[in-house]
Every structure is written in C-alpha cells, then in structure tokens.
Image 1 (spheres, rainbow, N blue to C red):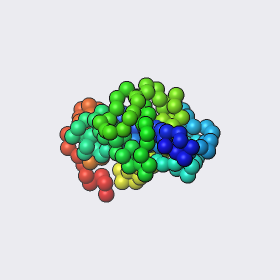
Image 2 (cartoon, helix red, strand yellow):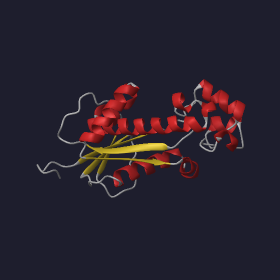
Image 3 (spheres, rainbow, N blue to C red):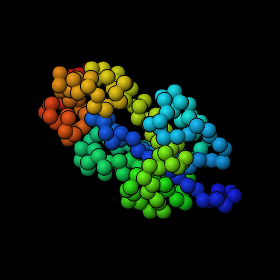
Image 4 (cartoon, rainbow, N blue to C red):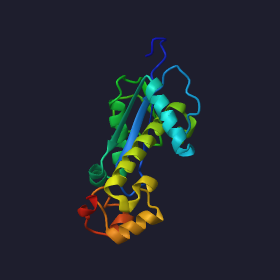
Length: 199
C-alpha cells in the first residue's frame, strides 16, 4: 500500500516475441502520483517519444524493473514460456512488492502475486502502457548494440524482426549465435551458426 492507503498496482508487458533474433524483454512498473502525459502503447509511439517517456517513467515511477529471457532460454522452453519468464523476473525484481499486477495479454506467469490478465492492456491501462515503453526502449537499445557485432543483419533498423533485408542476410550469411534457430524462417535458410561474423 502507498502512504495514502491506495494499493500498489504494477503493470507488466513484454516485447520481442516475434523477432528472429535477440532476447524477449519485459518491464514492470508501479507509477507514482505524479502525472506523466503522453503514455500509450509503445507500438503507437515514435522512437523519440518513447525514449523521452521512458526517461520520465524511470525518473518518476515508484518502482520499475526490466528483465529478459535469453535466446538460449527461448530455444529451451519456447517463446511463450520465455515471455512469461521475463515478465515474472521483471515483477519479482521490483524494489516494492505490488498488491496486484496487471498483465498485458491473456496469460499469467506462475507467481505468488494477485494478478489480472488484460487483453489489449497495453492500450487500455496506463501502467501497462508504461511497462511496454520501458521494455521496448530497452530491447531496441540492446538490438542496436548487437548491430555493432553483426552489421550484416541490420539489427539497428529491424530489431531482429523478419524484414526482407534481414531474411536476405540469413540466406546470404547464415544464422548467428543470437538468432533463434528454432524459429521457422531461421531454420529454413540455415543450419549452422557462423560465429566469425561477430568479429
């Protein structure tokens, strides 16, 4: 509970289920009383607006945490379970324990928190929208850094999603260790990773 007796509501959302490379990321947020204008589903915001809002959220929220599940974990337990794992890690990493967690989607992780799954929550519920922004900004930054290691795949622009240029790079160069080899588009075009591309 907050000082005024209001329950602490955490929003949680994940990003990165659809890409062919990189981790799946999740963020959990407990917003404070100070209003942050412009918060919306991260997919409806441009990069500059998302970054600006992410800075505000990190500065003004009562608590926030960003977590991920790695490519290795995605391959071991599948993307759905890895997404739930990332969300669980994000909520469990909050410095304040929420009274209730609002989760975007129709599935809940296995945890001890009171929780509700809300379909379309990233557009309907502000605290979930805030989580979607933090997760998106973090993952985009991560993929931009991966671009420096694997420039042939244009991760800075496609963020690992199956764009034509990304699929062409897979056909031409094969997959890297950061690709999700169990995903059909990756599996169809190559078998073995080509680690020398990281140099």
